Length: 75
Image (cartoon, rainbow, N blue to C red):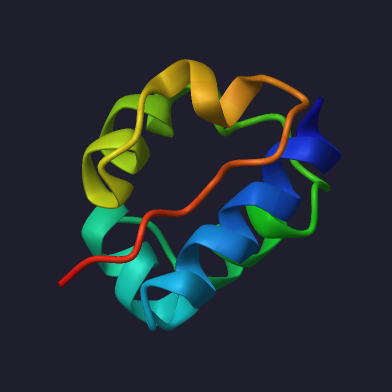
């Protein structure tokens, strides 16, 4: 699960043009803690599901499901 979430977090961050530092600051954690989430080497991501879904304007379930997130073009 954590590897799936990590891959999605990376893709979402890149799609929004954000840096790891920007997302980490939004979550009020260190860049290294966020980096571990993206690489799937930590289990401490569950408390960040709500703020991440708000940041990326997606449903929490989209982060947890194995299916790929389809991005909509924003104008």
